[in-house]
Length: 353
Ligand SMILES: [Mn+2]
Image (tube, helix red, strand yellow):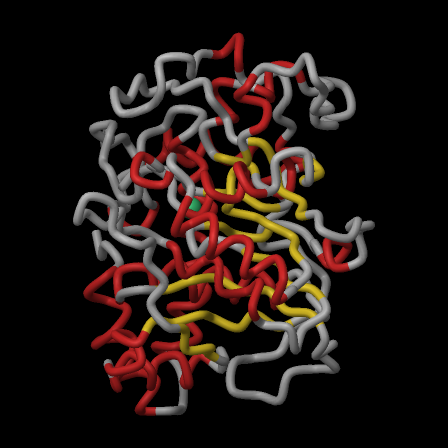
């Protein structure tokens, strides 16, 4: 799968140059300058609306640093909604890991394995558990996020956006393939990318019409607004088990959503799922100050502290600044257990130098 692939060889730069280079981005994204008050972990959360939640899927320890920072940024931007993390049975069995979620004050939802029926004896293994939220009908609305995202300004408006019956909302997939990855389809070139057709002045996404290129029907499942529904969940599971394209789906749930919700999804502006690569290949669309959700697709910030200084990789600075805040909170905690869990669960999965 595409996650965690190291593509570029990061360049180590003189610290001074790096800081100078990055400061305009940090300043314009306004990180570290939020005025909202937030609950410290372990305290009773303030007036959360229990009918709608953020969720993200965690299947192993590697993404825990990401999930912690995502949760931190939702609190920091003053969200009125709680992040509940979906964990697989393997994670549930890892008691130390579950202790870490508790120490973080993050509720978990244990999810069963979801896997397509084998075709010719082969199962296309992937992140199919991301379909679980459609079955959680105790909630009126769920917004799926990825744990390799950070929230830079309040996104609670996603919980109130007009969502027609039977629809989802998501941002387009970027099909520029700037890193020329061989596994991506041959027609993944900038001319066919939906972001090339977005309104550069307003940032509004291109409308999907009969004339749209096939790629404009593709979405990125890093951010998805959905209304839980048994009927829609069944339709998704049926499609996963029977649709002929499933064995070749590279992006699992994401590709399936594009098939099942074809003509039934509303495109969100890129600002709600700002793939870091857009800052390079769609620099005419991207405005730092408008970015609400920054999505670290491909190589992850926590894999290396020595990120490249180019326009895309330099966005990793934002993640590390947030990490420093969370690290301070845990390592200076009065709670000995929390300090221990930081060493045992976080330190091994986040690059330390
Ligand atoms: Mn992601």
